[in-house]
Length: 113
Length: 114
Image (cartoon, rainbow over all chains, first blue to last red; front, top):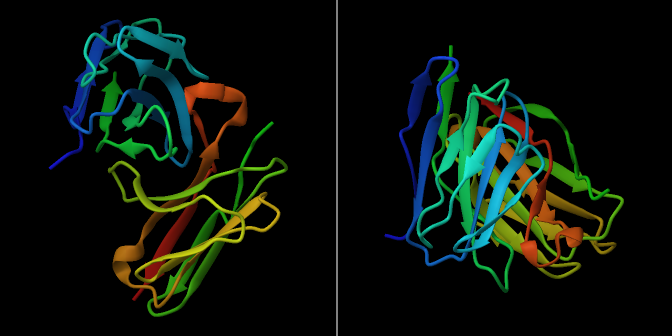
């Protein structure tokens, strides 16, 4: 079955540590996205990538970094510079042309104490 | 900007009732997407609309692309407990060009009471 996987489902870190969230897709999509969701809030775009080796900042990129070395993978690193990293992180992918539908992974809940 | 205003913010309904929610904008959209998010999970695409006036169904769900292209509606008939979740509308940001970014509404939290 094609889809998007995110791991782990739950992640706990101490303040000051960098942490990397995994996102893999086998939908053959060119575009991938990272969103942050806080309790009771909508989705805010962190970074997106339209093609391998290229990515762009979204609305709230400060304190985050990404890489896109393979079409299937788009890992997100939450750095110690992110002031309030505890949140639910969602990865999505879409085709680069044609329709706009984005398909989401199951999410990773990050807790930093 | 191309903000999406979603209402109501939350709904409490009895099992078996019909539900209606909507999404409006001051800007024109050429696509409307409706997602459902269950607690602790990622959003799942329910319905995609691509043409003004279009009415599309997915089981008990029906969504419409408003004629003005500035709004969309989602209806759920005969609600059941598993309909519980947050429903989001979304549309492409025209200013994003080829970047294909979506803007999302703030969501409608649906609670179904037995």
